[in-house]
Length: 269
Image 1 (cartoon, rainbow, N blue to C red):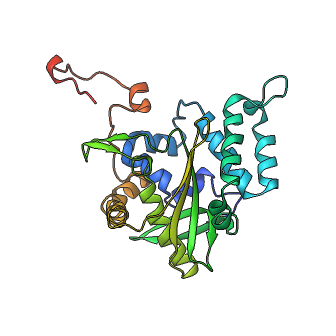
Image 2: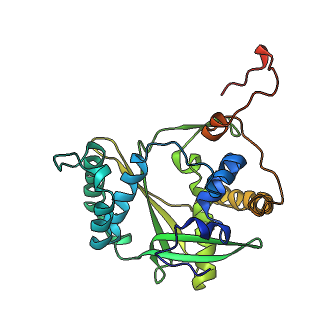
Image 3: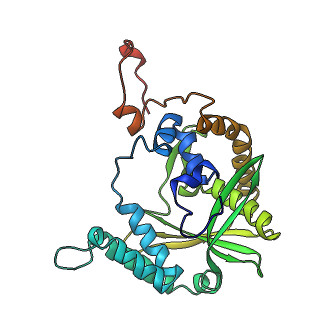
């Protein structure tokens, strides 16, 4: 299947191409990811955070994209009186925050926006969509909106709090995108993340991945893909049965008691 701007986000493409969002779903809970992929379960979630992020992204893509996004989502974004709802006013503040920064404008604004890339990673087809790509200068940029850039998130494997970039799997995204750009265009590009917070006033910063620790995390992310994606492909093809994590919204919604658990053995997070 050929990917286009019109069909990139179609669910059908996920049967032909792995993406970082789909991969992360499967790594969190196989049963949830497969049910979602097959259209058997729709996540119960407040879409506001996602919409605000896309609102900010669409502004820096193009005026036409921003106008189209507002028109498509105006019922969620506007009050009955036609005023912008509070979360999107925060989105406007985030836009102004980034727009006023010279480094952001010098790096992000000059790149080609929403570039689709594909490639083979360890024997499987992957897809990606680059927020801003500058092949001449050999770098790409991604905008991330987050509640607080400096908020820590508990990592059970490292047994410590980690920054949002690691907690949300953005090392995986940067590693995969670097490889897909290289395969699509024959150019090795450096990844940058521009993050902006939803605080008042907004915080914002630019992040590179050049340190020894960053390079190790990027390598680990690809090693995780190499270890697990064959199994994920088997799940998607129906050659393996998915495991339930037992804690996510899908597992809670579909849970059936099969045995008693000792009160002393209740799992805690």
